[in-house]
Amino acid sequence: MVSEYGPPRTARECISEHILTPSQIQDFDWTFLSLVPKLIENEVDFAVSLGLIHNTNKCEACNLPRVLIKRKKLLDGYMWRCRDCKSSCSIRAGSFLEASNLSIKQIIMLLYCWSLDMKQVTIKKEISVSSRTITDWMQFIREVCEQDILNNPIMLGGIDEQTNNPKEVEVDKCFFFKRKYIKGPTQDDVWVFCAVERGSHRCNLTTVEEKDREGLFPIVRAWMLPGTRIISDGWADYEGLDQFEHATYEHEHDSARPKIQKLSGGRQGLDTCDLHLVEFMWRHREKGEVFPRIIQCIRNQYSFGAS
Ligand SMILES: [Zn+2]
Image (cartoon, rainbow, N blue to C red; front, side, top):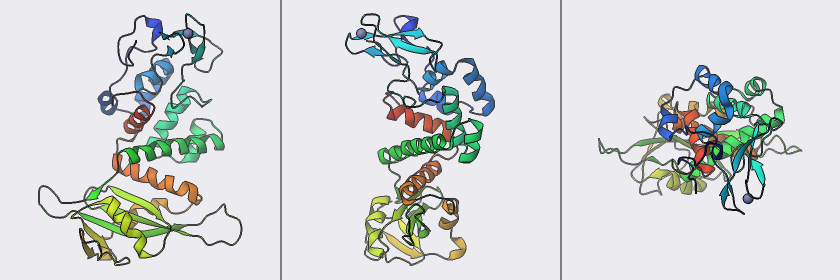
């Protein structure tokens, strides 16, 4: 059996001999200038080296590694074929790219443009795809972010180990979103409850269905470590949360509100609202390492093993 990262038995049983490690991906200086030549030189090899496409493929029926066959007519120019039973499959099988008709160049460039927080309309133009396609892809990427946050929840606050003081987390209820796609004169606006850790800028955001204050207690407990000093404008009553300190803030030091200004305006219905919040939280956690981190998340979530 050929392991994902192990040496191939023959050259044709694997695509690339240069699989990048997570730290190599992390440390590489990603820019348009460094990325584009790699895509032009050999996009298939590059996608495999990033861990976006599997390097090898096994025929389950014969328990044999399939071999790589060139097929110019295919989108990627290659397919896997079993020497024995002649069964074949796409080189994208089992990968994040599997269901897409976009070229590898387009997909990697899309991920890179997304990582730079470019506007959807700009990405759409730069990689020449339809509005529907770009919307679907933005959704796929947000789902990867969501899964990563579910796997690695963002816990805020607690006690600062160095100073032994409580960490401060600002909380606020912020925007409401109109459900644009529901017909009729509905005013079902949605509150967004947010928490931002002072100093680190790490944040959590969620839509809040219940407008009453009691609804926030479980959220605060789920997000914050015991000992946290919660700073709010006094909108909600946190007195019942004994394991936390509570203080009200002076609005001139309010930093929670501007942080989510980006989320206002132009956003869509409630269904996509939560995923927009997730993307926002995820980006804030990654801080400048967005491209290597999204690549790593895709790699982890599509069973490319060790991270
Ligand atoms: Zn076979």
